[in-house]
Length: 329
Image (cartoon, rainbow, N blue to C red):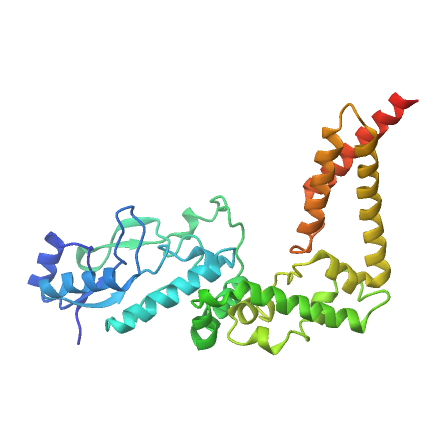
C-alpha cells in the first residue's frame, strides 16, 4: 500500500507533518517559472522530483496538467492542439523520469466545484462539499452552456492524439513545415475537385466535403493537422481552402472564377485609368491601386471574402470616382 498526500512545490510544515504520519509518496502540481507559469520541461520536472526525494518522498503523481485546468482542450476552442501537444510532451518527460501518474479531469470551467470548504462529517472532520441548490441560479460563464455531448467529443479528440503516435510525433517536427505541407495538400485536392466539376462547380460551400476524398498521400503522411482537424470526425469546424480562386473554381466552376476575375480586372483597370487621368490628387488612386493589388495577391493564401479592407477600398474608390465625375461635369 502506498500512502500519498498532495504537497506544495517546496518544503514547508505540511511536508514535515506528512513525513511524521507516514506519507511516503507525493502528489504535486507542475513546477513554476519565475513568471508564475507552469513548466513541463524535463529539467524542471527533474529538479522537482529530486526535491521530494531529498526529503524522503517519491513523486508519484502530477495534478493538474498544463495551463492549470486545460480549458481549451475541454471546450474545443482555438489553441487546444498546442495545449494537447504540450500535454504529450509533459507525459513523455514524466515517463522518462519515472513519474507514473498524470491525474486530470474533463470538467469544463470549474473543475471540482465546491460551495463550502468547512463541512463537518464523521468524527468531527472538516471536508469540502457541494450544494447544487446554492449554484442552480448562478450566471453562466463566458463559455455558456457546455453540453455533455460536447465534452465527450472533445475528450475523444484529446484521447485520439494520445493514442496516435504519428499524430503526436508530427506536431514536434517543426523543421518539416507541416502547415505548408497541409496547405499544398488541400489545394491539390481542390484542383482534383475542379477537374471533376469544371463548369459550374460543386455548389457553394460543398467543395470541402468532396476535396477531403482527394487529399494526397504525401500530405497525409505524419501530418497531425489532417488527423486532428481536416479528417477528424469529431472536429466540427469547416476545413479551409487557403486559396479563394481555387475555392471559387471548385464551388462555382470556371463560370464563377472567370466572372470573379473579370470583376477584379474592371476594378484594377478603372483605378489605373483615374491614376493616369487625375493630376491633382494622384495619391488617392495610387494608394487604392496598390491596396487592390495587395488584396488580390492575399487571396492566394486565404479562401474567405471576409477581407474587409478590400471592400472598404472599393467603397472609397466608388466615392472618389463619383466625386471626380461630378467635378468633371
